[in-house]
Image 1 (tube, rainbow, N blue to C red):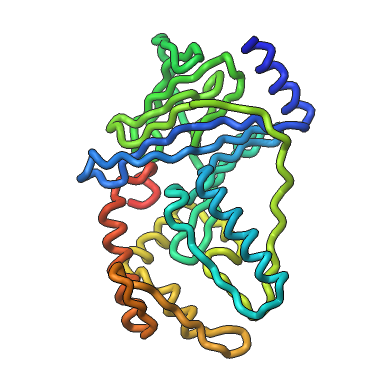
Image 2 (cartoon, rainbow, N blue to C red; image 1 turned 90 degrees about the vertical axis):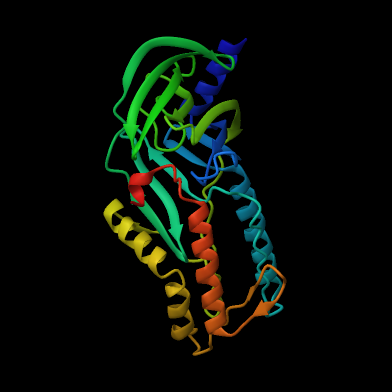
Length: 300
């Protein structure tokens, strides 16, 4: 039965009618100084004949909901827009795409209000070992690689003949069903899959000329990994730089950009200097607790 279902899934993908969606449970430790605090996120790997996309299920739901709400408000023509950030939905904000057959790999991520598309210039180089074990319902074989500043152990299955896997990993003779780094800080495990109709490409949302929603408008800037490292270091050194520049630049109609933030005790701040100090404080606290990224080489 499993073989028949798999053949149907593959047939659908080859004809372009379907996408095979693989569900991965991603467990990670953001703070290397607090290894008891293990986070979980459900990640999706969508595979079709053109390539694959790896992204957070919760982040996708949150972004889709925010987008639908914003479009509804724009169509209403009421003149005011309220954007409610669903910060608790989706801890993983990046996305990874691979283009077949070359497996050209891009990481989509952001730094402050800037969005980036980063080409991966290295392929995972695997050492396939003879050790085998059962991972879930699949017969899997062991392989290891050094990638992104971490040592990884993967388990792949030829039962699902896609040479793909979560995040930037690919190139094994079968789908990766589990992969974990040597420190146990990052683990991705396949927990299910289903065939879906290939979703249409999301159309770019056009905002009125006087409307700017930070983080929701604008295209990704394609840069190299070295350029991204520089952008990241600049952000760490001065977290509020982008927002200061936006405020000074103002809107296209010479209107002023106003930022407001609330402190943990509910106090609202609107004075620019107070706002920027609060942003810098929160950012530094967040960075201190998120010191264990999946790819250390990208930020160090």
